[in-house]
Image 1 (cartoon, rainbow, N blue to C red):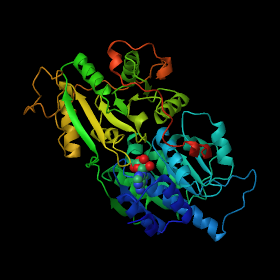
Image 2: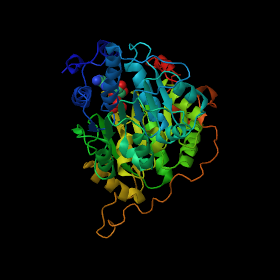
Image 3: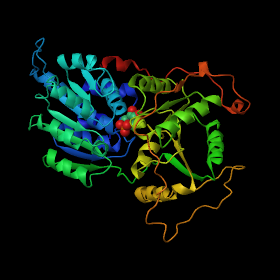
Image 4: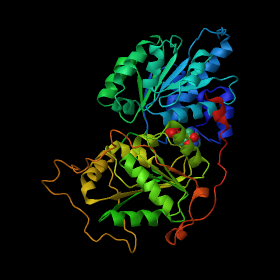
Length: 456
Ligand code: AMP
């Protein structure tokens, strides 16, 4: 199977060749022709499977077809026309990721206008983008609703609606917003939806918004990526957990690592601790201002950072192929977040290692994760750092309320920022312990980020 056989426009084939993609991924092979044919699609596909291109390519194809037909309306200054394609995503990070993908796959589409409308950033640039000629709008539902309420977002020309990670949007409470936004769109539009699952509320949303949708199920949510090796270390206490983390992060095989914590406070605390040990590290969580979050992500892409300490929501959408390791320092609240977390590594065909450091009180969550993925996470030990206590085993009575001890979550009022960005240059001289940290200064980013310039 090649991209040529999918019926894609020459401008898109060129961009795919530029990206070095040899062939479509399974989800692209199925979704792209169906979407180009105009079908509504429910796409269940694992993270890292190439699902972004599976909807961005048909969206761009649609724009190109309209241009070729000469039906393109003339833009009148001061009369907003709104986008042809609207992509709704759960988080700011994912919005930027999709925008970057659209700018990349659309790099040979002349005059392509892509804009993002997300919360946590000033309104000015978004208002300007909404007033101008616009092809593709990528938005988080909350901020788009604000712009609709003030009459600034015009959605009457939308021909294609994409709901990316619909399950996550519903988890975040966007159901009413999504219905409201969908009602403002032409009924004749095409609708594509991606989700880890189409059970329950997501299936009902799909039934409400789509017409005779085709289901494409490539990797169900129970599949973890074949390129990701998983390991589970049982830890005795915090000191043991920290010793294991220090050991893992100083291994030479770590190109870049994402360490997940359960709370924003832990993310800040751990980033500070790792910085003191000499790591090029930063925290990333939803309590940080957007500008700082963007700088941290850019630092990761440019490899100025080797370690990112992140919470779940902030890390969704991170797509950096050089992330070789994911470490679960604090366990996720939901089993499906485990799959999203480990999907930050093993991307674009590379191998990855996902290590979970679990305390005994995490036993219930480990069991839920294993049930969800229908896989056992193999237990592992590191010589000299073996746990003193035996591996926990299921107790007949203890299974009813597994993981009840995990009550500590992100504080309602995230703490004020504490310098979470620690570029290597600002670090104090490494301590004796951090002398084990792999040396090597920041390297230039492996890929050009100039595509972002096209993104407002
Ligand atoms: P996604 O699942 O959309 O987050 O994409 C995962 C990664 O796969 C991204 O780094 C894409 O750039 C990359 N990718 C997407 N399509 C292909 C392809 N056909 N061949 C190789 N890599 C791809």
